[in-house]
Structure formats: structure tokens, C-alpha cells
Image (cartoon, rainbow, N blue to C red):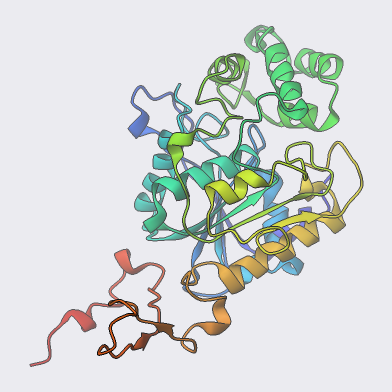
Length: 370
């Protein structure tokens, strides 16, 4: 199904060790997925989260394609959020818990700061981590997502219906062929059917189960709670860093006329449509949410991604873009402009090494001259 399958060999790929476990304490949840090493040494890191239930493997071709050039700028960590894939499981879907999962992963993998990105629900995880931990976030890139209440969007109600149908069967009492037959009969969307099929896992006992926590997921989407997958809670606050939103022109998740306003509300540094908010032209296809399935659309999204990484991500907010780093100076406004005796100076905004916490790059600067 995917056009980039053979491109995996062009990058260093490492699946994370460990198996998904149910945790009683939210702070014990560990995220897992796959890491793609960039093409150069000492590159900053990009942490990416797929849509709910979407396997991390589906995004490997997108990031490893040499034409997309993303690995020229970042090491890429594609992680499943809690309760999905090989990541640990816990009942809570609270945004603060989701955000803290990301920071724990960064700490255990010695990542000081990172670009956070995601697709759909994964973009919610990335943006939440940016809101709660802006000091660890250089920028946020969201694909086909907007921070608002999407619980009554057609696309989400469709997903909710599919999950309810999956909850009606006991996979441990069925063969794989019987489960596949159930999916074919009850899951009308061919893409969701494929995703659910990819989420089947054979247990040591020989029985079949889902890789995602079906009960937790069904409980979450069945009630209109504040921690619903499709709801952005006000308590998450603002992300004051650089952010970029990109979505298909005929998206079922981001309606162009109104759903772009929450982007500016939650991310006050976003300059608006055509600058940090982009709709990618394409056909009115109900499957356009899955951007990696379409060659032309995938390349355009990747181009927007690489431009953000190369020109804006991690750049001081008082500068226009990376071309002004070290060249443009910002006026100092320590005192009131009404003070006629004060001489106003200017300064060059500081930029720090991306992994300063786990590196001795500044060690020599801390030693006083003797």
C-alpha cells in the first residue's frame, strides 16, 4: 500500500525494546516506538506522535524518504502515545499526563529540547507537551489537527462507532480469520479496517488481542469528558513558542472556515493563514486525513515540515526566521522611552545548544579565568 517501503534501508532504524504493560501509576508509563537517525552527526531531535491506533510503522516511509529531506535536519522519534502500540497503558487520557509522558521519554533518552509534532490525536499530545513544558520544546508542528472540541465532528463520531463495534467482540475467543471477517463486515472505512487489522497481536497463549487498550479507549470516547481524545481542555493553557499547522484543503477534522481560529487562540505566536497555518490543496477525498497515502500530498506536507525545521523551529521569537540569527539586533527596552537621559542599546537574542543538559558544550565557559 505504501510507496516508500524500500526506502527504509536508507536510514538507521531502531525499534525500541520492551513490551506494552498496564501501569497502575500514571508516572510509570513509558513510551515506545522507533527512532530514525538523521543523516548527520549531532542533529537536534524531532518527536512525532501518530493518530490514535495508527501504527508507528506507517510513518517510517514518510520520514525516511530522501526526497522529503526531514532526516537532513533532525533525528526522528516516532512514538505511540500511551494506550497505543507498544507504549504502556493507563486509564488516564488527561492532557497533563500525556504531556508528562513526553518529558519522561526525553529525560530517559537524554534529550534536552526537541521539536514536537503529531498527526490528529498525536498532534494533541505534541501541543499539550508544548503547553506544559515550553522550556523543553523548540517548536510544535501539527498535521490535520486544531485544538478545539471535535467530539461531534463527523470523522470522530465515525471513529467512535468503529471502536464501539470492536468492543462487542472477544478476540481471545476468535481466530484471526474470524476477526478479519468481522472487520470486513462491520468497519466500512477501508483505512480504519486496515489500521485495526495491523493492531492485531498474537499472545503467548495463542489467542489474539488488540495492541491498543480497547476498554480504556472505549470508555474515553463513550462519555463527553474533559479528557476525551477529541476535546482540547482550557486548562492546558497556551503554547507561546513557534507553531505550525498544516491540513488538507477538504479536511474532515479541520474545517477551513472556522476551525483555524482555535490555533491562533492557543498559540498566540501563530501569525495566521498563509504564514503558520496552511491548507494543502487536494481532492475532496474522505481518506485525505492519511496524508502519507498520497504521493503528491505527502511531499507537500513534508516540504512544509522541512521549511519549519530549517527556518523557524528553535529561532528566537523576536526574530523573523533563521536568516536573522546573529545579524539582526533587538532594541533594549529596560527603561521607559520617556527617559531622555537613558541611552538605549540593542542585543542579539541568545540561542542555546539543543542538548545542553546532557552535554559539556558549555563546561569550559563556566570555568573562571585564573
